[in-house]
Length: 216
Ligand code: BG6
Ligand code: MG
Picture 1 (cartoon, rainbow, N blue to C red):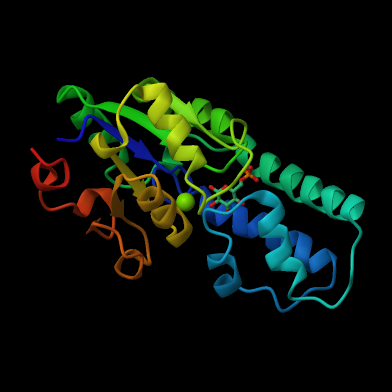
Picture 2 (tube, rainbow, N blue to C red):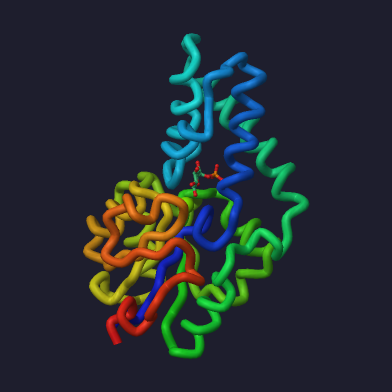
């Protein structure tokens, strides 16, 4: 039986995946990289800020030093933070709050496992933090998904054996990470059918039977 559920954040609990795209697009435009599209943005799902930058730069033809790359990633993050300033509970995705409440009522612990270093700010601004027991995010990790580190740290904080953890993810890298950690997985989001998760649903609202997913 599942004792803890570990949620990815961007694209699972909140629609900030859209804001990430807008901030990267703004940077790409400023660099004269016109080829960066929504399709490229899919490759940024779940991966770290620096790896996401590489996706943008690969669409242009200029070389940058490590120092310049760090400055570009910082610039994008500043645009993103500016966008985050005005978010509230309206960015919470359909079914997320209900799911978190349902898990609480069932006595199941709730964690977040996200690559984002902005996780604490997003949880505070949306008011989701009151439903979350433990957070593992880009501030805790040295390796990014598909490495399982972020979920291993979440399980440690939740004091739950890996086989009793369920990971909810919208990215292929995240599902690979969950499997590498020996955890069960539920794939959601626009590409849920391609993620090769143990269970799948378009959104948290669309999960047919939580008893099956939670192995009750
Ligand atoms: C993940 C997003 O949740 O966080 C990625 O899916 C993003 O697209 C990554 O690059 C890192 O986020 P941040 O907020 O630390 O730049
Ligand atoms: Mg995500």
